Picture (cartoon, rainbow, N blue to C red):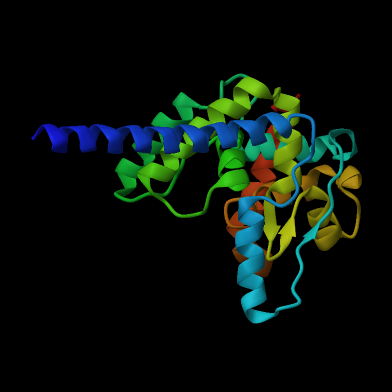
Length: 230
């Protein structure tokens, strides 16, 4: 029994050290990206691998642009559509989470989430689209790292440059050029609102932009003037 207990302690210690090393590695990248713009993210790698299954020569469309060269309309539209308490919360919108839970309970299925821009960014940078309690726990840890190390301006800048906006399309600049033939800096209010409401399912809405989504974009456009951005 003593030998077994000793091996169990060693195993637990080894697991603890592995988890610690993993999170120190994550912390190092988050700290580095405070000043250095990220290259490809985990989500980008996943999408590129999927595209190359059909076309080995496939490439992602993306171009990093600094925060100042992204339309204020797009910043406000994304905050209005995705996370209207963005500048006030610490990475988790507890009010939004509670509302999402209540809505899901009324519908009897998962129809709403409560993820903030910070949480979505954590997932996009390091994790996968799969849904599990372990992934949500990892997402929460990374979200805390991001919120502690970065300011809100940096969070929104990296998010707008790395989020998916269609098949192989990542970031505001690539999206603006793909859908409207302009730079991210030139997007108007209506264009920004239409891009913002695509974010929950961009590859689907790239092919089919239904009337209900257009109506949602119109509602977002009316709320944009009240959105606070860094």
